[in-house]
Image 1: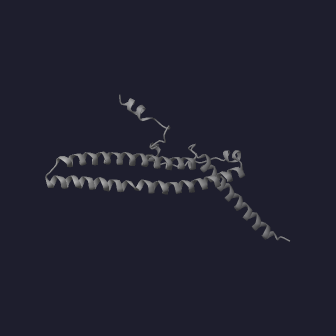
Image 2: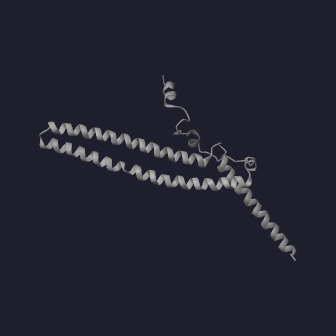
Image 3: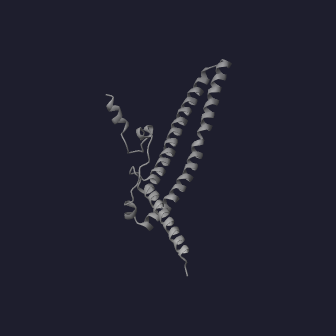
Length: 176
């Protein structure tokens, strides 16, 4: 038989558990729908993919330019005979090779970001499973409190993902 003290303790524990579950629901609702309307996990994956893409593009441009510089230096070396000038041209070639080596970071960075995207996707899958258990309608009804942004954060909204925000052409037109 359950004593009155046990009954009170059980009710207290159940109430604490229900409050905890409600807080978890609010946190999951905030992650899932966000007070600002963004899906934070989807956004994270998109942002990380955009970083990898931008890094790849920048690396490609850097390597093309360095390659063209080295071709120009090679052409100059054919016409230059002074040892000091040849040494300077060799230094330029060595510097270009150092840039090529430094650009190899992009591949490693892409691999590391891909691992992070997989982890974020795993967490997103688990949260989506919890959303399904609790029901999307029930979570949609949970009031999500917006986090206070600093004055600087309120002004920032970029860089935008491709196809979102204002295009550079639209910004340029503002200055015409």
